[in-house]
Structures are given as structure tokens and as C-alpha cells.
Image: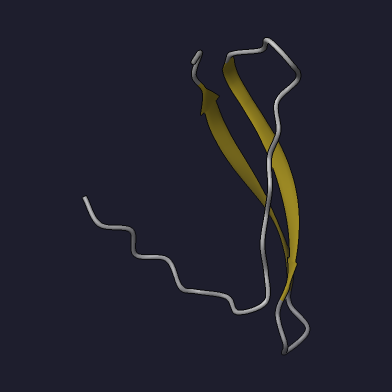
Length: 50
């Protein structure tokens, strides 16, 4: 399956789970577009045990 997202230059996101945690988690990002639109996006993550 191929991702159909667009690259956004200059933007990076980092996620670090609590030490020893694995399972479902999430975080929210507020995205502001140039024309004034602002959207809240929820990113769902499945943290795996290494």
C-alpha cells in the first residue's frame, strides 16, 4: 500500500513513548494552512515492544 500524503518542507514530528510502554497511543497536531485554515489532526500510533 502506498501513502498518498504530501510532503511538508520544514516540518518534523517526533514521538517518544513512556519507558517500557507498548500498545495503542495517540497525539494531536494543529495544522495551519497558508490561506488561514486551521485543522486539528489526531495521529494514532501502535507502539511495539522491542
